Amino acid sequence: MQTFRHKCQKTQNNDRTDDMENDKDLPNLKFYKNVMRFRPDGVYIEDFHKSWFGDYGRLEYVHSYIQWLFPIQEKGMNFDSRELSLKEIKLFRMDEEVKKKLLTSYKLMLDFYGIELVSEETGEVQRAVNWRERFANLNRNTHNNLRITRILKCLGLLGFRHYQAPLVHFFLEETLVKDTLPRVKHSVLDYFLFAVLDKSERKDLIRFAFRNFEPQEKFVWCPRRIQRKLRKGISQQKYPSQTPARARREVMHHEPADRSLRGVLPRYQNSAWNSRARQVKQNCTLV
Image 1 (cartoon, rainbow, N blue to C red):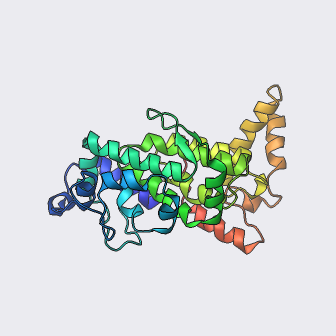
Image 2: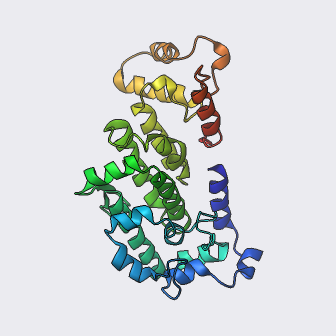
Image 3: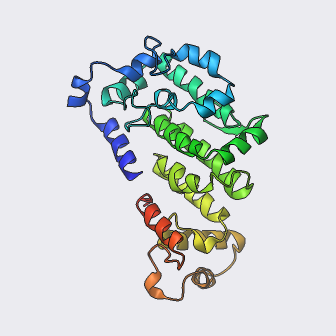
C-alpha cells in the first residue's frame, strides 16, 4: 500500500510525463465517455449502469467488469483491460461528466454490498434496506474484499479521495463493533485502511480500530510507540483527573515485560500472527 500511496502522490505532482505523451488510446477514459465497450463482454458504461444494477448474480459471478468500472494503475485479472495511465488520471479528474458516471458505478457496487451513499458531498454511507442478505454474500464470497480494495484505490486516484475514509470507517464499525462481517475483518485492517490517502484520516481510522479491536494486545496495525500514545489517550478519557504518573503506569501495565519488544510490532508465538505483523508493518507508515 505504500507503493500505491507513493504513486498517487506522483499523480498530484507531475504536470507532464512521457506516459502522458505516449498514451494515445485512453481505453478507460473512452469507456467512461460511452464511446467504447468494455472487453470481453462488449457493454457500454451507460448500458451497464441500466441493465446490471441490482443484478446480484451477474455482479457476483462475472469477474471481467470490475477492472473497467474502477481502473487503477495495476493490472487485474481481466487481460483485456488496461491499467490507468497518468494522462487518463488527469483527464478523468477534469471531466465532470465522467466523474458523474464513476459515482454511478460506485453507487451500483455499494448497492451490491448492501450499502447506500447518504451524502455525495461527504461520502457518508450507511446500511441499505437489504443489508442482511448482501452482508451474507460478502461473508460467503471473500473475493469481494479484493474488489473493495480496488474501489478504494480508484476513488483516491480519480477525484473522490474524500469518499475513502467514510467507507473504511463503515467497514471498521461493522467488523469490529457490530461483528456483522467477520470474513471482511482482516481485509479492512490489512488493506482497506491503508488505501486511504489522507494521512490524518488514516490516523483517525487507526485510533478507532485500536479502541475497538479485541484482544487489544494483539493489535498489530501500528507500531508500539503509537499504541502507547493511543492507550494514554484512552486512559485519560476514562480517568480525566488522574495524574501523569498514574497514566504512565496504566500504559506500562499493557506493555510486554521484555523491554526489548518495546517500540516494535508485537512478536507473537503464533507464527500466523508473526507473518501478519511483518505484512502489516510494510503498510503502516503513520507518522
